[in-house]
Image (cartoon, rainbow, N blue to C red; front, side, top):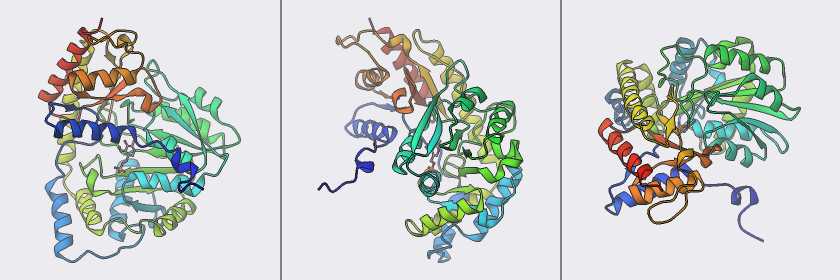
Length: 400
Ligand code: PLP
């Protein structure tokens, strides 16, 4: 009898995290690697958030808290949902977790059984299908196209819904494409969901503040308030406040689901770290200028990086409207031969070639269920991004 169970043996380790580790190992070995595979802001956590954590330690807030989050942090989250998204929640409808990731994981654990289907538009964040599989469910991948801005249409959604559909997962701004759904697009999707009473929606809004559309951000429960009892809205401080290591995420949703997620949390991680909760509270109650400053810098980097990439023959990229990723079409490299005689057959080959021969780490689109593309993060300073683009240009010019 083997030690491990099937559902874990089959689980793929996060390809983005493993690529990032490979790039870090090469860097540690002295190689001049530019790591465009990272999934976190390069900025430091704002001082007022750090101060909240330090004060929590000094004041002795170092004990267990309520499993689903401290009441004052929940109050700030409720205020945030009301202020930014026009969503009204009571404290029982909020769960604070150790990042957005475990909240998503627990939501699937609480609600997905064998045979249940979860609709996930591709390209998708790598963890969604794996989380659904671990819960015993079936991910139903619905392909979107570059032409549609990598966004799910109402028609494709309608065609994918069956009696077994439990969830639709929406992620806007998207990792990996940076696509942001407009109000009209969300209205069309909400219309389909409304007509299918058994379908629930996860709205993963973790990149909400990194929105370059010039339009105010919209989330589905705000667009269609009658759906509030069928939507789990997930967010957190990781990307908004450059606090990925602190591990604080939060979610608002129907009471029954939130109670179940909290119960799972009570039997697994218990409360998220008390010190991190205090830091998150300070971040959320702090001045908003830092958020706008970081957003502005990301937008400048985006403009410069996208221009540089689109000037390279054989590569092209849609201008991403949010987050900090460029989803680069590398079909111009497929079928070509490298200087060392290898043929590039897939985006995996292309990412390998770029890392091995030009020391730039990018993530192959295969990981996100949409090829031939590579995802490059622009959470790096403009000079380094410029150097990365010139290496990519050389890489393309060297193909025969
Ligand atoms: N959702 C998406 C789309 C993400 O890209 C990430 C992190 O990369 C997360 C959720 C997880 O966020 P957290 O660090 O808060 O767990």
